[in-house]
Length: 185
Length: 357
Image (cartoon, rainbow over all chains, first blue to last red; front, side, top):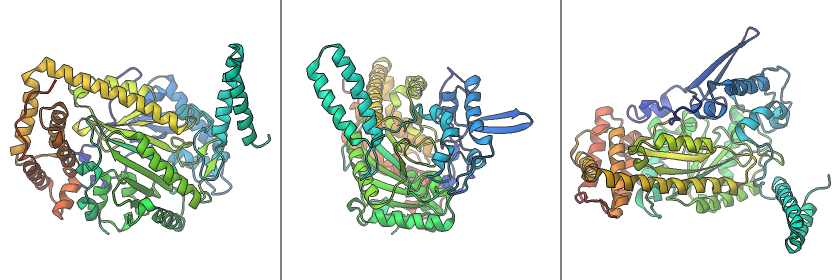
């Protein structure tokens, strides 16, 4: 598939032409283990007598490069994140086995429980593991502040190297102001 | 409160109340949010889902944008009405398939919320044409109000916590619905789609995930939701959409120049069939309406007629045809009704002319 044609995920034709109620009546097709899409690439891996089935939509399979070694790494990441039978969320009792089945977590508290196990998968689907966007109303967007601080620190180094002290002074003030918003480590 | 109100109401997408544009049909912003202290819908018990739905409906009903909003509980809606909401992109197939989901839809259908889909809250803002900033500003205001009225699941490291790792962080899916007949006719669409995929954008069909691109309409959206600011996500999408619009126009101009009279003939034949056919399937009508929409963009037909095409595309979907008729129809019955509505709407269309340079 790598380097092959990327087509929009194939439709079930009934959504376009046949029964009007196909959308709500038809049985749910297999879902991609990574995202919501309909899975069209199905991998079966047998390791030490255990059968692991992983389903991908075309987009996610392509991202992992279905057909080459990379997709099996992605499959490994899913399996590795989920085969160990030891992880259970203390809040909602959701287990890694449940994640393997559904590809979804049980509750917000599952995130810190499964984070380490999901790290590889998260890097594969998101490429990043630090939030730098909005925070809910009233909460400080710490990720955003840390990100801006990091940018300002890179820029101040450049400004000093270029002997642009006017810019450096402005950045120094910005760094002080941003640092003051962060809680003491 | 019925889905008939949704069908009868004039809104941006069907009646050109807002700015209409060639190529970009609509812009959409979606935020995934969850309440802290509750399991995600897929893991929650029925009583918990009920409690979540009550809290969310209560919160949204108090926001000015949702004044007199439509509230639909999926379990109470007949199949046909749920299918209409799916066809309007107001709820997902997943929400419509379950019994415990609910939807809150603003009067003008610009803002809608799915409750108990994959996440507790999926907030959507949609506008006709290309208006990413405008849609985002509304979504951001609503998100602010939401955070102030409900405790949202959030972590400094991972941002807004979602049921699926593909949405965590910003929970933002920004998308544009684009009409690309030029790139499709020229055979470039797969190449373009591959380039978009490689740069982190998903390309889907008209009805979202897992659907084909009926009427040469595609939905382009960001994939990554974590580690990028909302601003960066929107800029990335914006850059690509701008480039896509340019590429589409280049493909159309090249096609018109190379094909000459055959380019106009294709459009004229589509108009001829749509104006006289007695049976029209959804796929056939979508593809011919796509030709007419391109004709309106290019001056072969009056630009003022474009919104009629957009409305016919939406109202020609199977559940819409039946809901407007008020009864279930078999395939022939639907194709007959669809053809009749289209014939009637196109009566006033003038003859197709050559494209304006």
